[in-house]
Length: 140
Image 1 (cartoon, rainbow, N blue to C red):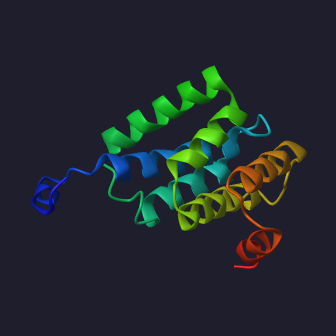
Image 2 (tube, rainbow, N blue to C red):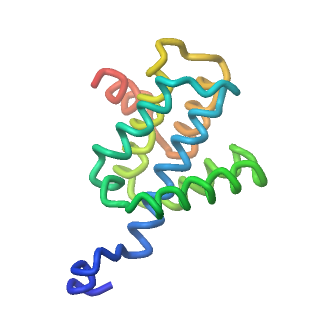
């Protein structure tokens, strides 16, 4: 994608992959305990509207991204998709951002279920996040 392509609002495939990884990670977190809470949906939307990596995604594209993510999670399973997300986010800071978004969703309803904690631990491992990095994110 050239610089002038930005005039059309098109995003590069790298930007699309990064955005999808964030969306998919958050969807996994929302579904982790089998209960979709209003607070989790509100936090998902807050992330979509406020994060620069996501707020430029047109609504129709976001809808398609969500559908593709739900399909991938349901057919491949959360563990496989967490590994895929780690590959889709090649930079450590991107993985930190994804974990930060998921942690905010997990904490949004004030209750961390055991299944949610298990997903966070899998993400920590697959994203290669140290205990100190996780602690720093938690203290933000």
